[in-house]
Length: 330
Image (cartoon, rainbow, N blue to C red):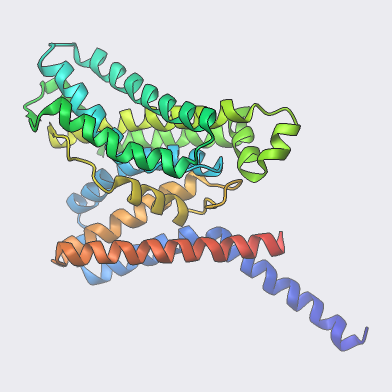
């Protein structure tokens, strides 16, 4: 090897190091760019009232994104979460209004109901071997249909003050739903990186057969990921319903697409085995800022749908580039 070729080795190493750093910091760079762009395009974006509104919008998606991070890392996907949120919300509303349940009991029951729905999805996937995509796609339709049947087109509103206060209370200037979402994200990060549950999930998504050979109860933990997802759908239903003080069977439409885009943009591999709870939170914030900015600019709703589709494609493309860089250089 010539001295010239030897001198090129450190330069090549530096290029790879920069590429890996960009791949790992990608979500944070995007957040910074989007935030600065929104600030320049719409000066009132930086108003305290608007920033609180962005945080409100992101809170529900942060909660859902934490659960979806586990599901996708484990090699699955859940397309039914929007319908789950709607079904849980209308059932919970019936408990509060028609049955006069105490608010605390109704909230606990709603989260438990969500976990039961998640268990149904998880067990069906684990026991039948039908792909996650198909089972949850069916759930997207079925759970929405159950929500319509249960509500019979009724819109529930005028909830007790104790319930509405969940969505309206501020602690140290921050909305309570935002604090709840961040606490859930912190717990999710700890579980993902510091417990056997998270490690098994990563192992299953990385190489399912190898995980099974090593003694990991694959089907059990795959099903438990959906139980977690369902429970967080229950939390999201509580936060959303308390904030808007109403619920109906057609609420939360498209939430599954928004959540999956947040998770993929945040660095979780579509192919499983690698994920980032913090990245998912960042992805949810990015999409909330973009949506808020388009509203402030007066962009037509139909064009906002088009923009969302483009963002999803870009997020998947970014994810594939990031995976290639990390796979080749780490």
